[in-house]
Image (cartoon, rainbow, N blue to C red; front, top):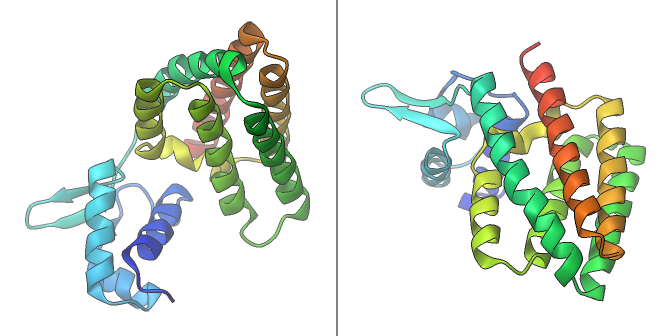
Length: 214
């Protein structure tokens, strides 16, 4: 197992998002060191970073605990993401380059491949693919402030773990949205791109909350 801070951070973060570490669960450095076969230094740094992102809460004299997000928390984050990312999709349709359209299509095709292949870690792979797709749209919008705020919101919220809770039907629906959004951006249809992104995140919110709190 690689002992770099980034490798440990990514693994612990994925486990939190996937529900392997349950909300409210006590996380100790020793426990994670034993599970991952790494030293305390990268674990300590990874937990500090996850604390900054709000995925874990550190309590004095008690230690680190996985953050407990309520349904209201999740709905609020999705509402904010919808406002920001639907605007980004509209701007991307106006400002995107041909190369960015190619990259969006590649991302959609890769998502299709991952969903069909269903390898052992396919939901983790889909999680990263989804993150890339939304990030590509944000960068194509050519709005640095919008990019910075939306990226920070997506990176520091439990909604990044959507795919770990998705059913096959949820994944298929998400793929359909991604393909239609990419097509609207390709054809420079701002209003359709914005509406599709809003619908995509709205449906994602309902599906994710239902699975997470069932």
